[in-house]
Image (cartoon, rainbow, N blue to C red; front, top):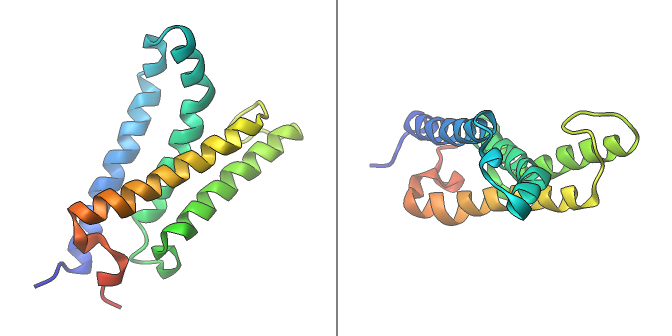
Length: 139
């Protein structure tokens, strides 16, 4: 017998919250402050640019049972990437939302974060827990 939508939702919520709390802890405990040299520089330049869209992807992922349009991985990637890129473009015009300095490389990091989250979702989580696949959900 398959996993019910309620069990699926609970599992998604647990995994999603664990991912979000991990990313929050990395920021709260300022993990980058323990690095030095180039590692410190690159961490503070790009780590959040990767982690924020990664977290956003899994925020959407937790809700794909209720919102069918979110069930395709590429929709979640597009939403995360577009929101973050819009924020970066606004920084260019002096409007600050997720950051304060415009950098083209940040846009590449947003793509990396979004695509890494999709990879974790589709290639790792769905292989470990096949019941998470959206096509196995009750319609």
